[in-house]
Image (tube, rainbow, N blue to C red; front, side):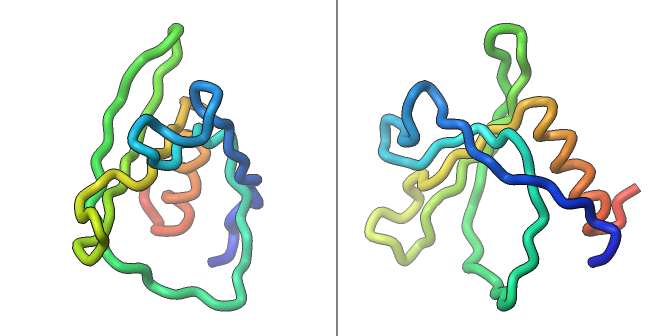
Length: 102
């Protein structure tokens, strides 16, 4: 894809740690950076859920992904990422550019 702006990805640990109560990885994404890769592959399909919430006057989107059916504990939450307004706007712009959303 051409025309994509470089965006730095950095993770801010949530609530003083990088693992949730159930052991899943948790992170608040602060920013995005485009990175070219030599080899890309399509990953296995999984389920995900999302929620929105407010904390200290800020709005957040949390996306939780769940394990593949072949895992030892299928359906267990495996990763959580959170976006604040700034990182959500960056992701919105990336999706618009990558998929031609209007």
